[in-house]
Length: 382
Image (cartoon, rainbow, N blue to C red; front, top):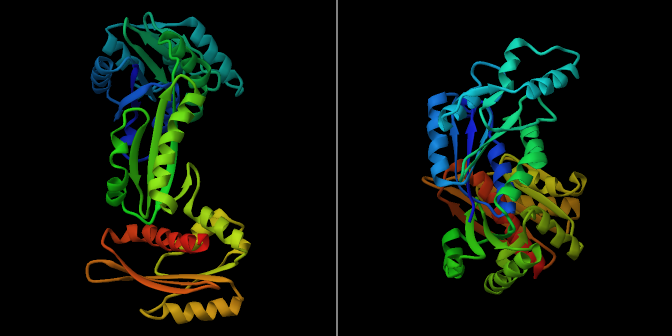
């Protein structure tokens, strides 16, 4: 079993000035290679702290990947930190300098003297060309480890990862397994209740089953490690079938499916057109629906309603637009909770409910649209 850790470098990440997207990208690619990811960490631009983190990661994992800190300025510390961590001096590589000069010339410029820093890498390391940027990358090898330093610019990191790093990892560690992941998306049930229904399956070792709760939606993650994609798919299918038998219509989709998209597809099967009315949700319901369909097909209204005004207002809106279905929700603050009035009008039924949400008020804005969309989905599927 080959393990990995990821170290993202940059004080700007710690200060919240930029969002780290590299870790997620690397994690998914390592997963697909069958490499276990033990942990990720972000370190500011401090040579000693970076070196200490690298040494700790190398003790736990065979593959350690750093991103960021390979630029030409004084506060780009990764080269020095890696050299310190492995006890090597930095060495000037003429071929890397030639690559930098060539890359900068494509912009009609000559490289500045400080860009020469980028041509220095730890002695004995493997230089990796960066074909889309001026920051060369490198791999430091030990008997057990591969310490791989990549740029922080996402497109540069992704390019070098696929052109050089993935082939290197596959060859060095003889990787002949893949990890396949599938999401089953559920709504209308809390994480705790879902755990009661499939908790025994969460104890499986391969494939693994895990839960990820969002507001109003819970994802079930199935991950299988196998020699081939076909074998992994077969392993996942067996567990997925068992879960589907237990949960039925609680599952609304898979992978990239959205609750709004699936609900609108169910309405389309029925031949129903839809109008919506919301109050106190900052347009969250209509925004979800319009992302999932042609905005012109969704008739939505947002107005301020008082308690008990939702149903008559929705009845008028449905009649005015000659709609088959009308969905309404109004969110009001209670003493300690958020109170949601819900109304659903279809050719077959008229449903009203009042629900309470006890979490953070801002989270109620995400919870409420998912709750009403799931109610509409279940009615449309009957």
